[in-house]
Length: 125
Image 1 (cartoon, one colour):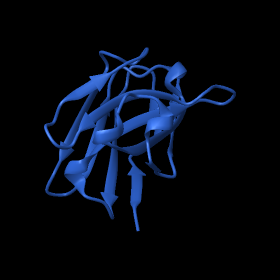
Image 2 (tube, rainbow, N blue to C red):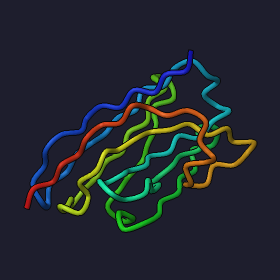
Image 3 (cartoon, one colour):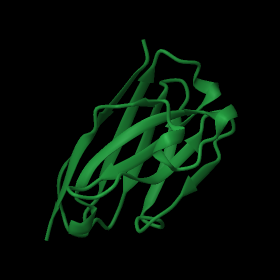
Image 4 (spheres, helix red, strand yellow):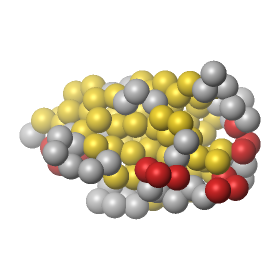
């Protein structure tokens, strides 16, 4: 059974940082990329960062670009997302997801096969 479990969300002040983690199990690690998405109330889900588990390459997009660092611990099958200089507009539910590398891993939701349950990030001003 595939499982993706996010952790590390919570409350942060504007200008602060949070580190999210995504623990994965149940699939062949090197065949997948792990992406992070966020969804604010009333808005579409948007991709913010992803990492190729096979070669470690990374990709960022959107308004958070430049404030994020995605990394992976292959031994633990865990991906981390370091988020810095947070602002209230970053308030959202953050999801990690897994995409099969051979079928594409752009930061669009439809390319991701498996999803975690999400973790809430709330940034106060």
